[in-house]
Image 1 (tube, protein in one colour):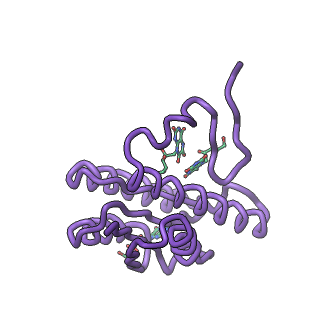
Image 2: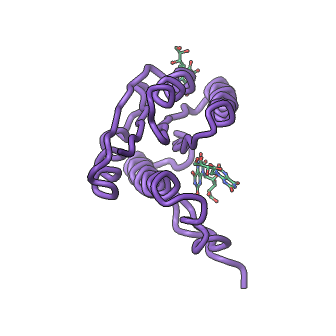
Length: 154
Ligand code: RDL
Ligand code: RDL
Ligand code: RDL
C-alpha cells in the first residue's frame, strides 16, 4: 500500500499539514499518511529522511519562511538539505514553501498557502501513484502554485 509522509512546522502561521492530509486522503483514499511536525524548516530534511526510511513512497514538506534575511538563509540551507535527501533516497520530497513577504495582506497569504499546499499535494500523489509521465500532459503550461497560472507563451 502507498504511504505518504507529511512534514510540517510549529513555526508556520497556517496549518498546512492538515490541508495536505485532507487533499492526499481525497486523491488516494486507500493510502497511509504519516505526519511529522517539527519546530522549523531546518528540522524538515531529517524528518523527511526518517519518513522515507520508514517506508514512505514520497513526502510533502510544508515550510513557512519569515521576512528577514536570516530566515531566507535558513530556507536556502533547508532547500539544499531537502534536495540532498531526495538524491540520497531517490524519492520525491515536494517542497511547499510560503515566504511571509510574498504578499502584504495576511488573508491573501493564507489563501496562497492553501492553494500552494492543495496543488502540490495533488502533484505528490500524481508523482508517487501515477509515475514519471503523470504530469506530462501539463508540461509547458505555465502552472503556478499559490498564484494564477502564468500560462504558456504562444
Ligand atoms: O532546529 C531549531 C531551529 O533552528 C529550526 O527550527 C529553524 O528552522 C528555525 N528557524 C530559524 O532559525 C530562522 O531563522 C526558522 C526560520 N528562520 C523560518 O523562517 N522558518 C522556520 N524556521 O520554519
Ligand atoms: O517541490 C515543489 C516545488 O518546491 C518545486 O517544484 C519548485 O521547483 C517550484 N519553484 C519554486 O518554488 C520557485 O520559487 C520553481 C521556481 N521558483 C522557478 O523559478 N521555476 C520552477 N520551479 O520550475
Ligand atoms: O511568478 C510568481 C511566483 O510564481 C514566483 O514568485 C515564485 O517564486 C513563487 N513561489 C515560491 O516562492 C515558492 O517557494 C512558488 C512556489 N514556491 C511554488 O511551489 N510554485 C509557484 N511559485 O508557482
